[in-house]
Image 1 (cartoon, helix red, strand yellow):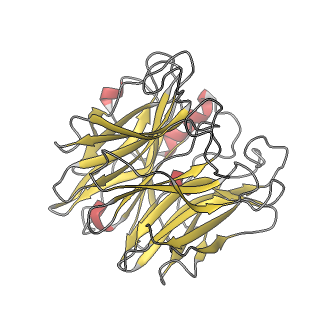
Image 2: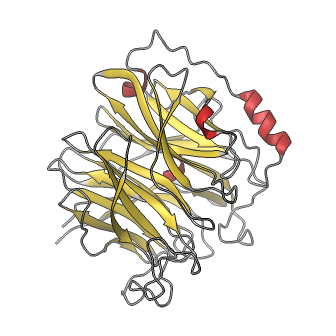
Length: 383
């Protein structure tokens, strides 16, 4: 029987702490680090119980013992270009672009992307701009922000969160995953990847999928298989009147779609739809690989829509996982890692695999609808 050890990473009275999937998780020399952000709690703030007028404070947490004890701090550097979480106007966008540097000159630092910590964020999910930072002291301080210059986007906005691949044979090379606004409606949602070999210039690599109007495909999570192929899971949403992976009899609404590339992310093939029928736009995928090549997909469960095949499952608000032993083609039924959150304002997981095969999954959580949102982690081993 699998044992689950739940620990608190960060919890402060009156503080909303959330969204590790937006900020990233890294493993370095026995250390696991995770990013998140904080703001003031506001139970009248809407779905997310946060005061949107409160400052956005980026945070870091680190564990040196495999996830049981965590140290948290506010890092040095400009990791956030938003003053608060209210709406963004053109003047905010222009100011953010002026704050970004468009030259990266870490030529004297060994292991650029491979050994440092790369972090990507955006000002607005539809219009951008997006930017990135680097740390070479395990997240204590960060250089940047550096702007992405990507001519192929042709004026589209693009939303970057932290998901990237590095290369052992070229420490300067990095492929980053993000989403661009759709031509059809200007809203977020066409997943893609970009690449750099020097940090100064980024080149467009590929669109992961075509996304219909009123739908989105965002927040990619990617792993590289031992044979070099890349598996990428994408958070997907559809509307009843516009299907791509759902049907009228089994509506998609929100879920996760999985893709494969065998040519270093140049071309993609959809290979499976392990999750669909979720409520509230779903939750981002969190894809990790065990030492034997088994894929583990972790995500937050915010409930299922009526009429979907997932609606009858006896699942409560919480964190679930599914297993694939055939490189993402098929998946096990979902199993709970943790259940019993007080409301759907939780999830956004990021996970790391320890040397002993156990997984450390970090996420934001609540004990009741009226309680603080805090960062938690679970140490567990999949069946």
